[in-house]
Image 1 (spheres, rainbow, N blue to C red):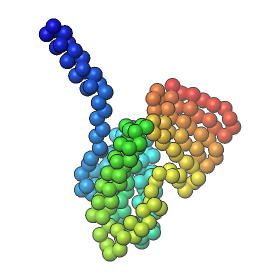
Image 2: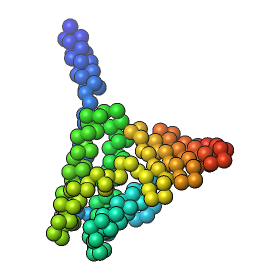
Image 3: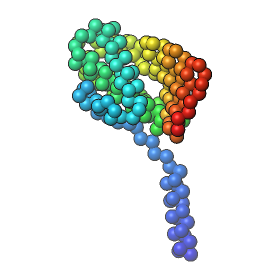
Image 4: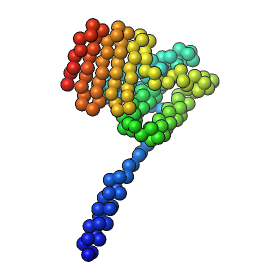
Length: 190
């Protein structure tokens, strides 16, 4: 009888533990990062070049809009956005269809980026200009100046379409790469 009760209690404990989902939020320091703290090229996964490109595009646009000529400030913006886009993509992969958990984690990353930019944009009105134009500097549309688009789905899949109509699909689950040039000949790399 005692063995049966012990066995049932153990099974119940395991069942509860298996059904419990633990959601953690992505936390990081709000100390403004610097270009020196960015990982070296090639030190990150294949999307690192995309993260750098998106961060540079946003930093250059902010510098142009706000007439920022100080290279240290522009580098700080670039680094803050590099980590932001990298963390956002990571969160989208981690949370998948859990929109409530994803939303909370995204708000946290955006808040931390705002705090970093507030420390970086120290000249009068720079941070206020950033706040009023925040949606302009949001990289979620993932399109660049040459009309190429990049979409990162919640499951980590990536779709790229360049200005010439060439398409690339990267499957995050199995690492398959599908190429479809404008001429229509498909190539699959596994």
